[in-house]
Each structure stands twice: as C-alpha cells, then as structure tokens.
Amino acid sequence: MASSMNDFNHLKNQINKALGDASIVVKISCGLVSLFYVLGYIPHVYDVLAVTPGSLIPPHFKIWTLITGGFIEYRVWNVVADIIVLVLCGRILEPLWGALEFLKYITILNVGTSLIASGLCLLYYLVTDNIYVWFLTFSGMNGILAGVTVALKQSVPETELKLLMLSIKVKYLPSLMVLCSVPLWLVQLLPLINVILTISGVILGWIYLRFYQQKGKGAKGDLRDGFAFSTFFPEPLQAPVSTVSNLVFNWLIKFNICSKPIRTYDVGAPSAITISLPGMDPADAERRRQKALKALDERMSKLEQPASWPSLDDPAEDKTLKDIEVIEEPDVVIVEHKDPKVDSTDTTTVEIT
Image 1 (cartoon, rainbow, N blue to C red):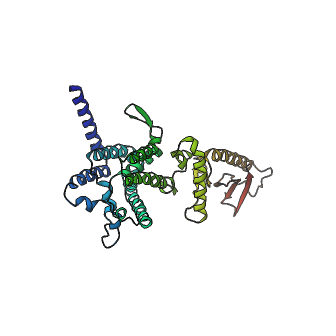
Image 2 (tube, one colour):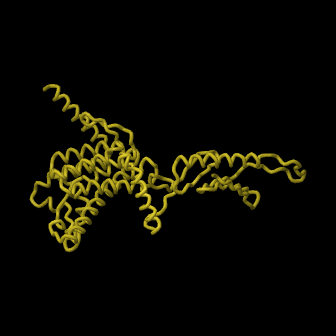
Image 3 (spheres, rainbow, N blue to C red):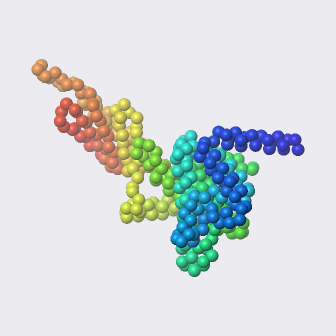
C-alpha cells in the first residue's frame, strides 16, 4: 500500500513539473479542457460548446463551436488522457517548432477535423435524408490527438514508448490509433463520429506537415521518403499505396490543384552552392550533387591555370571565382561562371546519366 502511494505521488510530481515547465499554449489548452469538462455539467452548456453540423449555418451560425468543440469532453478519463498527451507532446514539439507554430497546428487540426466531420454528416443527410445525422452533436480531441501523433512520427519516429508490456515505436502511433478505433466502433464502444475525427486528424495532419508547414528559407513541407503516405500502411501494402498516391498527386498537379514541390539542398560549400532538384529521391540527389561538384572542381582548376604569355601592359587578372551557381535539373548539370570584370557569363553543361 505504501509503495502504491509512493508511485502515485511520484507520478503526481512528474505531472506537476511537466505542467510547470509547459508553455502558455499547452497550459491554456489543458485549462480549456478542464474548464469545459466542468461547465458541461451545467444544463445546455454542452450543446452550446459542442459541434452540431446543422447549427453551423444560418440561422444558428454557431461558428465558435469549431474552436470549442475540440476541447470539451464528457468523460473524465478522456480529460486526463488529453492533458497527458498535450503536455508530453508539447515538450517534444514546441522546442522544435516554437509555441506559435504548435498553436497553429492545434488550431488547424481542431477546426479542420470538425469541418470534415460536419461535411460528411451533410453528405450522409443528403443521400439518406436522415435528419438525425445532420443535427448530431459531437466533441472531443480525437482529431487533435491523432494529428499530434503524426507530428511525433515526423519528428521522433524511432523513439520507443512503453505501453503496459509492449514497446512501440512512435512512427507506428498514427496507424495504431486508427486500427484501434475501428474495432472499438464495430463493437459499439466508440461512436462512428470519433472514428471519423481520428482518421481525418491523421490525414489532415499529414497533408499540412508534408506540403505546407514553413521550414525557413522559403522551404515548405517534409518530402522525406520516410514520411510518405505509404509509410502509414504495413510493408506489404506500401508499394501499391505509393503507386496510387503518386497517381492522385500527379493528377492534382495536372489540374493545378496542387503545385509540384521542389527539393532544395544547401551543400554548405565555401562557394555557397545551392542545388534545386524537382521531386527527386535523396539517393539520386546525392549522386547528382557529387557529379555536379566534380564538374565544378574541374571548371575551377581550368580557370586557375595562368596564361602562357601575359601582356606587360595588361597584367594577368585574378581568376578567383566571384559567383558560382550550380543548377541541377533531372538530366543536366549546368555550371555557370560569372566574372564581374567581364560583361559575360561562361557556361559549361555536363550531362549526367
């Protein structure tokens, strides 16, 4: 008994310390979840704060529920789980992103998942004429928590979590969350709307982190192969899923719904070389980068060779490179030498196979 009390006190101290070290964003989020849970016991307050698809449009126009709906829970264990996940994930993500970006991500997940769920309710109502679905009231942080697991998969994929007797890598959490929610719905332990929020949170979080999150220096998104959409599926299914997802993405690019991403690599050389590669895998990009640098070295060695018969009236000019730019395209590397003393540009083209 004494040992159990000591463990409980230790856990309590750890939570208090984590909350004390948390940023203002995490503290406000935890405070809203706790406050709304208490206010939910007041009659009609839950209906005012939770999301009702039919009330988002006039004459009700309860737009604020897109914000408050994600922070109101009606079960105490959901409140505890929300606070623990927010605190732990905040300690990992906020140092990497900053408090403002973390708040932005939470807001996108909260509003976006509520809109997706409401849109599906509207579609179901139009098809089946079931008025109950159109005025279904729902709430909870399922979508936010699912999106946060996607952010953890991106940031610390190989970190292991110990859940009871199991050790699970963080990169499997989004898929595991979806796989657990579906069976719970089938045995009627979880409402279908919660499954929709979970799945939409995973998809919405991945889309934002993959293509739209600002990375600095004009770069956006995370195009690593380890964060591709197919990695959310078991290995036997990754190849067909990758094929289908690439076809869909290329179709979206063709109709200008999405723009083709450009991978930018800063090789960090003293000559400040930047190579822009449109949609290439890292291994191929590295091979092309090495060939581009080799071609550049050959060009520099030729430029640094002294002239055979320098003019006495016109001393040999310094052959130091003032501005070198290497632009790599899928099949050609172009090396440009710009000499400020001469109003011309020397260009060398090297084909790479």
